[in-house]
Image 1: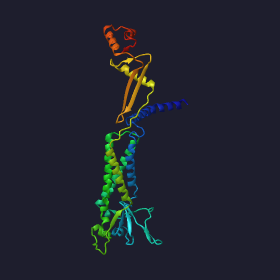
Image 2: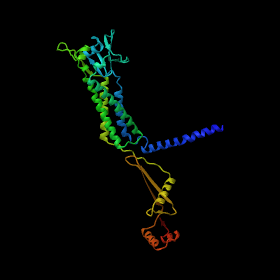
Image 3: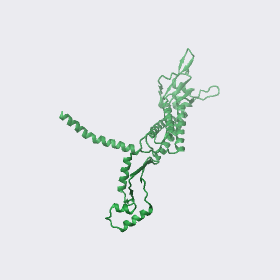
Image 4: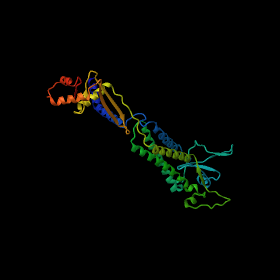
Length: 344
């Protein structure tokens, strides 16, 4: 049993300083960032909600619902001239199924997307650029959204707030540029043969027979446009309204602690600080507030109750002090000044 107790004590003797240092480090970090609920007030909730909704909009697409495709590209993708349309994305597509009972073509969105069999042939500069721009917008938008959520409990500096606004604007611009995917060759081809498409040969169309491909906005691209507007609104809010100053925080201090603070400051001061004593006792006051960066400013002052010493008597006591030796007692000072002694 004694060995077990010794092991336990040894274990805690090793880990206790580490845990104590970690707790001290976390406390210092919390004091530096002024960790509390909504330190900037409720103003920061508006851009947070806008950027979060924009991020959810970009993540809501499933990869094969970016555009509604009709024309020659449908037969190029499905190999059938009976299918009227497909829903294409940047990574896959989804073809509708025929229902004889209703004599209609419908898409079952619970089905998996069909990957492109010859994606290397279909991809071009616009396709690759749209993919990368969309990916970068999601990464930057997600990172800045998570960082904005920290402003609900931590104080952000003005330069951080400016960086957040620039990042949201960059995500908005990248998402807008990702719509360049609609300039890909697949959305403008007139051929239904994959070899002709790879060779760059197109079929001539006329007024009687126009089988050119048409790509229109669908769920995924509409979500991208929604994210663009949401992120643009968040950018305008951040730069137009400016930096939200932290809400001042008052700290309550006990009367005993106030008196001890005043006593310590008076002992450390030089000849300039005086403490007036009287039967009524000391009254100490401390005002604590935070500035626009969340730093704490403390102002302490003392006052004596029922102090009636006049400027004239004070000047008289000083003249008496300058003419008399230093061995005079405090009672003599009190008699010379009319009952109120002032000493440094």
